[in-house]
Image (tube, rainbow, N blue to C red; front, side, top):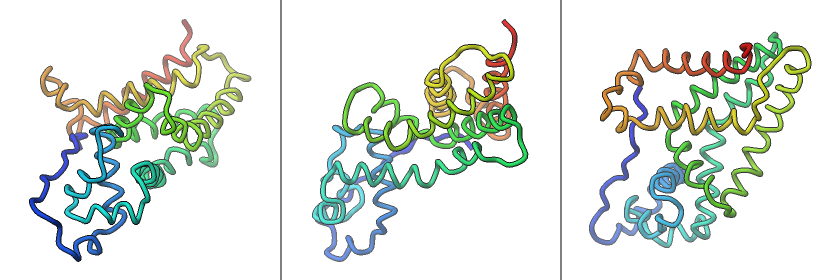
Length: 221
């Protein structure tokens, strides 16, 4: 499956129907809001625009989420709760050595990066400036992952030779490297490489990325 660009639906004309707000599921609102924040950025997204896109009352967003900041946090938290568990679970796969568990983690992360281009876009936008939103991402999600990755790599390094690359560098390779590649279907289309992320080659590309990263970490110079 190609990581397609998320386009926002055309805005409806006129005032939303009085009962339209109650017909919209909160999960749908949060999912749509996440796409908007990832595509437009926080400053480029307004509650009024979101309400028009969704065809609901502007006041509904204020009542249910309190503010744009509240909606951003809820949208991000809901998305992470849905997409993060399979990656974090790699740290606790039973019956594997630490080296094998790390390889499983890299493969899962490459799949995650390929399947979540909008989250890759959000981290790219928010990672470039010091804001309360970056603090939220780092404190709640990035640091807990980094701490587990640090511990896993420390155990591996105690028994075998590894290249001295930092965990932030590894995470950047996965998110902004592998993730950007799969999120850039329009770019790949223009340079004649779109087939690399098309089925059935997509899984092969994920495997190649994972193998490349692992061999770079453990191969002798």
